[in-house]
Length: 105
Length: 105
Length: 105
Ligand code: NI
Ligand code: NI
Ligand code: NI
Image 1 (cartoon, rainbow over the protein chains, first blue to last red):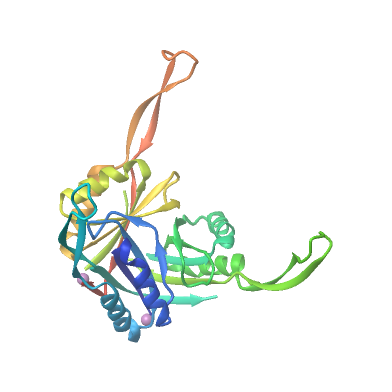
Image 2: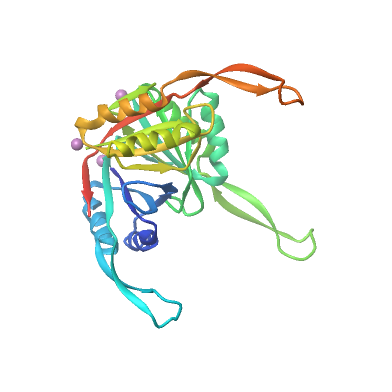
């Protein structure tokens, strides 16, 4: 058994949780601030068998892999004046920990 | 030294915390949502010596083992109209993790 | 790779976080209550290489080692009536956990 911590940006957390739930993983979301990523982030905790660790990591990569997004920022008082900027989104920090003993009561 | 995570339903968390405190265990309660159990849940973190892990687990079993409860649900506008329903309560998920190094400063 | 949990009093948490950030450590702060220390506390989570665990622990010791502080408590209705009391501040509980696998995506 393994316990996996996934730290993602707040904006990515529901996508990642839904993606993991769809594959049958239970996810506990810990309230957290600061951290491994610069912006607001969320810590997710997933307990799973060794042989499914790879699957958890690939769901996280699929749902919140780092990518660039074009965002239109209004720059003037009129709505039709805007500037397109490239921002980095996504990214995650993952820690896989060994579980000595697991009990479901 | 071991670090134990106990995930319980919100309604069971104070019982479990009190039970553990009475036996001399310090419990840190992490704010959490979603998770291993279907309803709202709480994650408790307990640090303890190897030889007391069994005691922690038996307190948790005693305080929130799964059981069925008869609940009277009012079903009509009048208070004396109610329906008795059997609901599942209790249950917990426990992860025992090995601690490499422990410091109290 | 190691994952370190540091549980400190709420009043000490920003000092410890700033001290760790200054040394280049990322710190995730988990919302927590109750616990290893008697008063309100905060759980910090730090991921780091084995060889830097010592540095994390010494920053924590420096920033929130246990010490006594003289506090002036107003004891009467007039502001100039106060009593000096010695209180214990600082202190921390540290758990160092081994990380099986670490991914930054
Ligand atoms: Ni295992
Ligand atoms: Ni030990
Ligand atoms: Ni390592």
